[in-house]
Image (cartoon, rainbow, N blue to C red; front, side, top):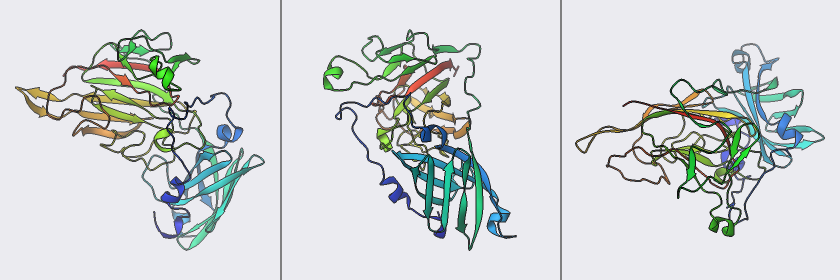
Length: 358
């Protein structure tokens, strides 16, 4: 971020949020059907351009403009402007807007505007000038959303049953099947339910090494929550390597946020979509190669998040945080694929895997 473009620092913006321990608080079960109109029709991604800029000014030379409207708490939204989506671009403006009579209005540091069902408009300043802007809300669906399993793939979940899954102790899956051929994480709401073995991570009954995985997921609107307390789950490979799943919409894309190899490698960009939208992970994983007890090549991973490459053939240096198998220099056999229960009501659908020859 540079100079006059920034209204609120990231530190201030993040201080709006407060993380909670969902189990200690008695669990958190959002209602997917009771969502405020502003969260359905105003929150999300916007594309547009600067207009009426001074000739040869920065805004005239670089007219594209993008924005995000992010739910912070009920009636309050973080507004962010930048040059383009799915890139580590400079932030032009970052500030809080408030919802009044169905319209979100924001103002500060030379910027003012409003967000309505007709789009986003206003004036912005920077680089010694100012200009009007107009943007429209866009839904940027993943190109692999709803993709059919290829020949040779093993369908792990298509909405019909949990036949391919179990909990760690071999017991039947206690998660829910829900509308839209999806499953939803079922977490223990209190310590009594945990004692009854309700909730918990789920594991495939089959074991895998090198593989290609496709899965689709979405997280709910959870005003007032943020960080690791909002839309948290993960996909674990060989019990050792977690691709983090988190509601990181509108964040920086750090090493513990969505798309990261948890606390190991951050995503190249933050490709998160807003809450309620279905998103995709397409993961190509190559297990480490060992010969006579010596590692010949490390495990490697490519991850496409909503079609955006966020890891490209990256060597994985060590087990990620909270992995079950933290060994550093020992061969790993084939292991189940694991989906994490972190206390949040994440939904999954269309999960399939293609084992790869190595």
